[in-house]
Amino acid sequence: MKVNDIKVSVGVNNFQNACFEENDRTIDYESSRNLSYSEIISITHGLNVISEFYDVISVASTNAIGICAVSLGKMQEEALMSVIDSNPIDFLSSTITLSKEVDSEIVKMLKNTNLVVAPNFTKNALEYLNTHEIGYVTIKTPMKDYKKYLSNEIKETPLGTLTQAPNLSDLNKDSFKVVSKVKPTVEQIEDAVFAWKVAKHTLSQAIVIAKDLKTNAIAQGLHSASVEYALDYSCERSKDAILASDLPLTLHDVNVAAQGRVGLIIVPSVTREILSAADKFNISVITTGFTNALF
Image (tube, rainbow, N blue to C red; front, side):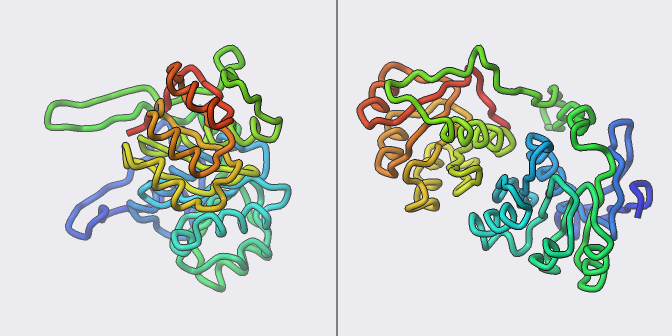
């Protein structure tokens, strides 16, 4: 089913009308069936975050609310298993977006409640998807070009129409700084970059706990409770992990991170008080020089 054949007549709730139109920034893709309003939002979340990792093997689990889990791996099976392990409950009905061609071994790990999105599918994978009635979307626009299609963000409010440019921020070697006494390992820095890029596409105030290039917990939109929620969910997996925050942390947040035995914090900026607390607990700190709040 090509883009101009897709119809959306119902919104998030059955009593809300909705419509779907192509525009000059619509990417080239095909869907095996009509997509719901929520599915289009979920697919967009998946493509947004996977576009950060298009050149490696990456997998994301998303829903209409946002990102459920993300993982990179040497093999797709490894990355998908990490995503399932990170958030098994939300996986059951989530959209699964992959950066590379999908084979039959991957689709056999999916449920008919999943929707799978990828640049391509092998013949055997398509046969399995069709036989088991698993919805799929083929993204024909190269993922390396995906960000070129991002449009201005528009929000209609009773006060007027808000418009802003898409978030095309990226880490800069001049603003990306290790500011703590304890210096991170190469692996920790790689995890920090990964976690920061995931946090970029979550709702504010986002906290991402990550280790070994996979998310262990994602908290978003919870404000002051985000750190505690993420660390409680991550549990033992927070030991020596990375904590990424799209906004500066409070002293309480650092104390909670220390209790969770977090190894490194990556944030837009820190005060002397926050840095002193991190040094006290032997936590490495990286500052990026800019916020990534999405709201």
